[in-house]
Image 1 (cartoon, rainbow, N blue to C red):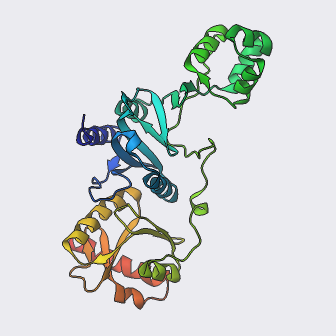
Image 2: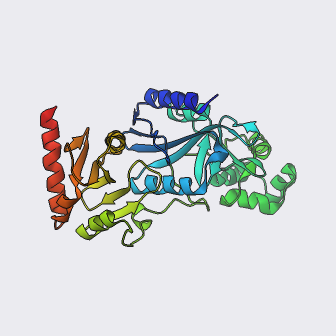
Image 3: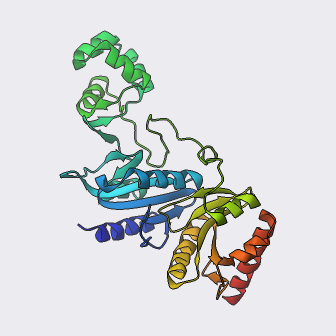
Length: 323
């Protein structure tokens, strides 16, 4: 199976699940391959045949993009190291969930979340500690007697009940057999967790309050935008104020810029943002699809976010009139 086949399969799954899907990001480097949305669910999907090909820098940018746009980052692949990914198992790579296409399908189409996570020591399941404690006391069994039945320590059972330790699949099956109750907790691929298993921080907390290095991005910052620079996305930055979020590109006017602006337009429709390209020099058109083109000299004359918003809205209206 090649990456091309994987991407076609993923797009098919997303469409079956009712997502609108962006054009494929085929401009290198790329932190994600597809953006997709279904109602309030926004996904940034990275596709790799071998999930170990994801590097830390790419993962960091995916996480930042997802947090800043209130979405989720997800890696879909076929193998890890020298073995194929197991279905219904979640693998983590730099704090991003990685799954097989079948697991991806089960989660989004069949509404069947995975139960098992892969760790260096093997496959593990999270136990609902409250259900475990209630079932044990109902039988009734002491911590010691249940521990003896399983061949583990009393402390281990206590950790299961406190939610501080995952268990092997064999242990969970044995527990469920003894107590006659379902204990495995499903894994929500859309929840953002940090490396310690805590819900991830809010988008506003991750943007460094620093002046951007790029001159044009610094101008946007001066106008009043909060700017998050990117290094591998199709756009140069995400610029945000209290009312607007802009996918922001910077370039000279060229055929490569037009291709990038077209891709940004597709992504902005999915992310429900605006798309703007700041051009060094002259522009030959005021838009590429939904991406608005603005000359740098025009930006120089603006004094605040309201004036830029008015310029973008004016050109957006002209674009709609043309169509």
